Image (tube, rainbow, N blue to C red; front, side, top):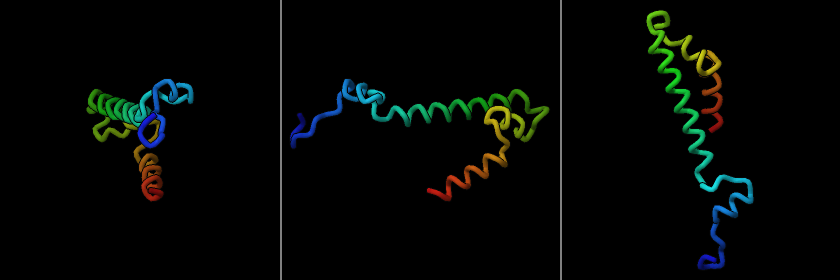
Length: 81
């Protein structure tokens, strides 16, 4: 036990609770997903920039929505924060 009577969070206790052994695991997975999306968009834009100079089609192919649709969702999210 820690001073003050608090038990520490061990990896065994976290695993038993169905959580990753690290506290920042969810944040790191989200960051990794966003990094893959950004990298995928850049690579798609770079490889097709002659046919798609604005990158809109590359964005849509990687993100599954147009920039206008993504912007709407993003603005909604920002206003809720």
